[in-house]
Amino acid sequence: MDATGPARLEIEDLLVAFGGLRAVDGISLGAEPGTIVGLIGPNGSGKTTTLDAVSGNVGATAGSIRVDGEELTDYLPEERMAIGMVRSFQDCRLFPELSVEDVLMICEDARRAVGVVSSTIQMPWARRAERNKRQAVDAVISSFGLTRFRHHRTAELSTGTRRVVDLASIVLARPRLLLLDEPTAGIAQREAEAFIPLLRRLHQVADCTILLVEHDVPLVFELCSKVVVMETGTVVSSGTPDQVSRDPRALAAYLGASAEALAVSGPVVEPDRGGEPTDGG
Ligand SMILES: Nc1ncnc2c1ncn2[C@@H]1O[C@H](COP(=O)(O)OP(=O)(O)O)[C@@H](O)[C@H]1O
Ligand SMILES: [Mg+2]
Image (spheres, rainbow, N blue to C red):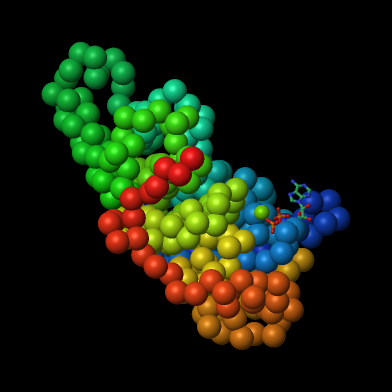
């Protein structure tokens, strides 16, 4: 299997049953390498369960999930991570007393596992690893506009800025296939809009394929080259944002309620100074 670059995802006739409930009822969808595919639909339609099946957190009852042509049925979640699959993100609230920089250093450590003992003895290779680590962290701090928050404790950050730290930490996990579940959940509309350029940057910097579950339809239509609409465990519509937005089945299933929101959302304005997040409390 090709171990670098964005991955190809193919889901075929996937069925996930919880007892008698078919949470995912025979769906097929794919993501070409390097694309962002959006998965939308009402609450309970099976979006999260689909991501769980791909990451291996729930077992597929039937069907096939392939990454770069390799069938994942027998892969454990850890083995899926080892081929570059990253599920959702780190929540930096877990470390309220640490600075943004320290949280990111921990993320980088988690991936590289440089032994504490050898760093202490300062073996040449350990020093080199330490330098590379710092460079990787510096690069994400600057590409996500976090420079002025670098030494802030994560507890002091606004929810929106904390989510930016979470996005930056994803880059350090080196995803090839990223599964994002509702990245804008629980944040203010203004901050959610600022997520569009940030997710675009994440996609670009991490150079990965993204399967994005998100209730913010304007954000999904703006970011994704393909949108899949689910309802009660099935795919009711799929295509480009343009095709889906004009598909009566998508409108009936989900978009009807959001059509108004789409109409009033207007053009998306990119922040002019590199998308540095605001810390609005
Ligand atoms: N672990 C579980 N056990 C039983 N039922 C579940 C479990 N996880 C999800 N479900 C059910 O499966 C359906 C789909 O849920 P989910 O995938 O979370 O939907 P969505 O993410 O689209 O809101 C829902 O009816 C939900 O109650
Ligand atoms: Mg969900």
